[in-house]
Amino acid sequence: MDIRQKNANFCVPLSQFSVSLSAMTLISATEEDYLKTIYKLAEKQTEDQFVNTNAIAAQLNTKAASVTDMLKRLNEKDLLVHRPYKGVQLSLKGNQIARNLVRKHRLWEVFLVETLHFQWDEVHEIAEQLEHIHSAELIDRLDDFLDNPKFDPHGDPIPDKDGHYTYLSERLLAEFGERQRVQIVGVKDHSTAFLRYLADQKLVLNTDIEIIKIHDYDFSMDVRFLKTRRILTISQQVAQNLYVIVPIH
Image (cartoon, rainbow, N blue to C red; front, side):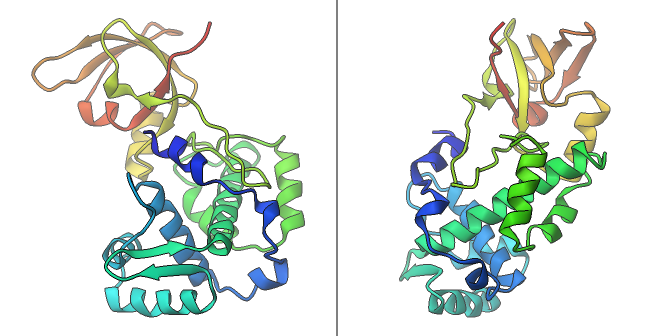
């Protein structure tokens, strides 16, 4: 099951919670970072939604002991639940706050790219700072100003103010065969190096390509850009990190 699609099964409308703005301001930016990290790690789980301490420590590049202390603090605030030998899972309140952080982060990325003309590899760190602004009115107005985008510049879905996502029936490019035509709609690897590579090669969102040949030796692909007819060879690693759909013409 696609990770993004799986998350829809756990989506609870934000409007069903009574987490006030004043309550959210009692949570530090560091605590918010932990909640969002747990939320995103849980998305990747194939079975349950429990996340272990070591995974959190690795994602945040910190010591397990520091993570344990923070998890105790978040548990005291009823933002997560702990299960011995399984890990932690966000509470409904913690899940709502984390999903709202995702919404703010992705909206700010759209604003930075579309309005301030940042490149898509430049916006993550800036959005990491802006996502901690707690004004719900500001974010709702930003959403309206941007015409309520459904996806961020990297193709990731943006939850609306009620927590609902829009999903595409996307698959990785590596899953397709020769002579198939697809459209690029997202990236799995969000690293700066990968995004810059894609930009240099014109492998950007909404680009239509056709797979001309898959090489048996290393499973690299020759792809043709349908608009310019240019042919490019891409590695298997690149193909495994591009989300595509079959376009409807």
